[in-house]
Length: 565
Image (cartoon, rainbow, N blue to C red; front, side, top):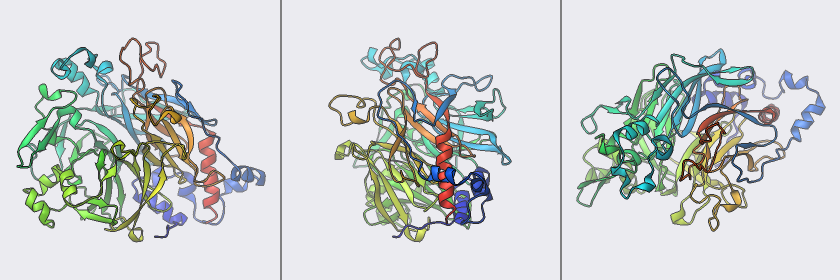
């Protein structure tokens, strides 16, 4: 299928439908009307400046194993918030921050708003001072106090932030500042109870996420089985409980079926609901697009080897409940409905639609969905409307470096039931990156993405990742001499990965998480990383704000090229 190039007005409309809203648009999009004439700002810069921009090149970083957050020339960062920081009189910022997103409190002031941050998982050594290496059967050795500390440090945080004199800062003790944890009551957006409950306790394993067209946060429960285990069924449909890694079920009898969902958070009051219609699996993200008739389409990947890509299409405007969940057959380019009423093979296996959604992985296999190599983050290209999916890797299939998958919906319609799938970029030494994870498009259409090489294999002799050294942040410019190239623009501290890239409304600040620095630490007195270099030398997951002339130049270059039509 031929790539569709959107005109400027369509680009503006697309961004609004993608959930960004007009308040999120940079000035050049919000104000532009003529797609053939450069803006007045560039008409006054002079031809020499314009030519400099057209010849602009990004000099990327070399791979590094240094214990620091390194940035390419033209970028700077400051720490916005880190693990343990007070956000209110009763709450602290949680551990292992991942996905971030930002919503202005007032559309007329894009520099003041609410930041949502996921807290994906804990390292017991740091959080509860529990050392797995000291016990033969460690899960039975924890105390309730240790488990409570661990459960508090996952979920997410809402904090109000403002840009003051060029730097973003947390507004201390703002009434909006709050934590969502593993003990927060959360309702189920469903008509039938799950394990006898319509309100469940907490959210955990919050990896990536999304934002809705009605300006609420979406946080996705990924490796939920680490917390309360999982229920598995034999050939006779007899259930068995598989224990978790953390052993929380020894103290709290919370069913595994209450986790593995997409959770919607109201930023104003912290109220939350879990969307059962979107299916239960290791959700990496949930990327929502609003159709012209106000129905929504939500894409999500199951981040596990040999799992699947899903799409929900609502049947009523603004609903994440009424509609149909589909799973992808990427070989034949079909979206297969996970619908108990319409699929005889599902009726034979499951008792109703609720069970289909709880056991979505099994249902997907029965329908013949395509197994993929860890589908993680999903983003929509604001210029073409194509969908990009990070396939991180699959060592069982000898795919160590992963790839980025491109989905082109038929006729560019997001509610289409057919599509074309192709590989956009394959990882490896030749392409300069490995294990793509989180994706983000800036307002100019440049693709940014992070890598997720495992700390147990990174910088290890004999492993396939030596050439890449630490995890990194990359950009693929859309315009200029570097167009289409993969360029490393940041290198993470030791053992860390960079996650949750999100651009502030003016397009000039990239909010980014630095997750699990020092994760391979065995002795807390001898951490493998000391970033962000606090006096106690304890590594701390943190959120940083990245600014600089590089982002501004890329932004201006894209503006010039797009002004040509």
